[in-house]
Length: 325
Image 1 (cartoon, one colour):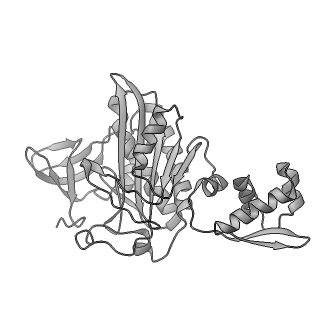
Image 2: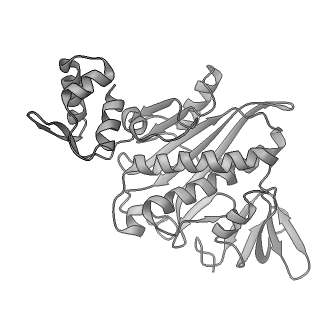
Image 3: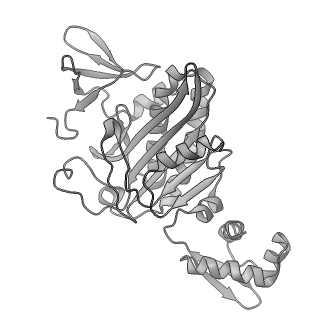
């Protein structure tokens, strides 16, 4: 009921009477009063005026179940939400929920991770109150060989969500880092459980640096936060909701063809590598060339002096990005 009361307060310019809340939710005035007090204790500034009711003045930077439910506009993404102040890994928790039978759209979010991880097993450090650590659970009926493209689907959704909320130009460094002003703001890690030609589940984990004020010296030249790049703070729940809405759209496009045909142009328009000199750190033989966008399978097209190559995995450095000059 707290989430529904909060939603109603958000949608109303003026006051909502206590009696209206009682009638709408079929509860007593005491129950409404308790719910309002719980919201106040959680940091919501709610004005109570005699004979007028309640009026929402301001909201705190929260991203728990109540807050996210009160602003949710999605059809299925975030259908079940689990929030944790601190957790080892949202991906790990999402996989546990998948094994327990929870549906597509189940969403895990945390204020802090103690065992977060990025690509190639790298650690993803987190501090409380600074970032978004979230994982979306999917159970798609698709060929497992096509699942890797979902990372790029999530990258488009994340970049668009950040732009929607912050108005900053969020771009994608192939395949799935989101950057602003040439510095990494967000990382994405997709993990899959499959058997032969059947997918049990996929979890897409996303970490966004939001309120970080600084980074260790070894990361300062390539990592940043929304606060550092935009000069202001944002409500993290707004970013989460924007991502879930954007992901529903990009995922629907992906499912139509099980590839990136419907998203290829959009991805290329966000690609910071586009038309730029890149160095591909191929384990067999590194090479350089110009990035020409992606194929409908998510491969990076690189034109070298001798041929056109399709890069499906590995590390890619871009001139002027992450220290590659």
